[in-house]
Image 1 (cartoon, rainbow, N blue to C red):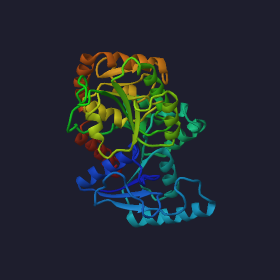
Image 2 (cartoon, rainbow, N blue to C red):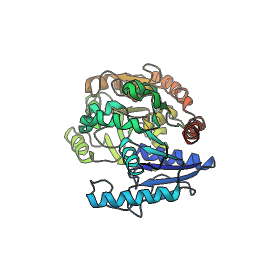
Image 3 (cartoon, helix red, strand yellow):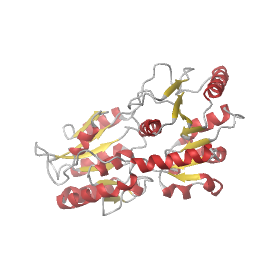
Image 4 (cartoon, rainbow, N blue to C red):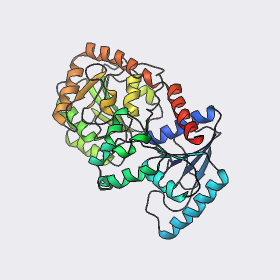
Length: 370
């Protein structure tokens, strides 16, 4: 089967969306499919994640992919994209995020190629971003998709009724971890780590985690907070750390190519996000045997955390006091961390990668050969 995956840009981006695009494409190549990738990236773009040699990557190379294009560039893009699609003749488009989906649907009008809109966020994101005013327009645009793939089953009810007949639930794959954390045992230096992994941006809401750690740090002087990731909020977070006198206790190492080592060296994981799609970092922490903490009001997080079993859900969404209580409960109780860590590994076995890839393949065959 000839497949065309579409994303806005992936050049050197170490994000969850980019990672899943590459992961699914690599799996489809391994299963014998012909796979193309189309992005608005400039020529010379590179993927942060290893991409199978069998993938043909088409970089549009017309204007800044992250800025609004002029009318001339837009028309040039239309011609270039239509020419490319007519040459490659994919049997299915898989468009990640609603923006690229709507663009490709418009640019390829009349070509008759079925399109999957792979949504990578819960609809609750519209409650937290300025684009929320366009929510109805985006939902109506999704009427044009042959299938809409969502990552958590609970999200289906958050979409309008007129989309329900084309929604399919496919979570992200979660491979088993090669190494395990030891939640109840300190590291060789005698210290414990509270870990988080994610982009330093509005969605992840790391200021709340730093505030919570500031409240509990005096009581637990042998604990440190490590936040792995990069993003536009770095300076703001660094200023907050300095303002609260937490230098030496809170570290922002940036993006790490050896993330498994960080999971294995932590005793507790927290993701304080406002919203999620399928929180890959949270799932990976569970796979490594870490008890986890997040907000009950965060879509995606509440889908993976079974409160009181593999972790704890702090009430609300963004409540510093509630987050502090949840973290303190687990920091005080190493036996509880150990038991929840053991259950954490079991809780993500249902996301076996080969089973997830088979579900993708079934949907692709279904719409390519109706």
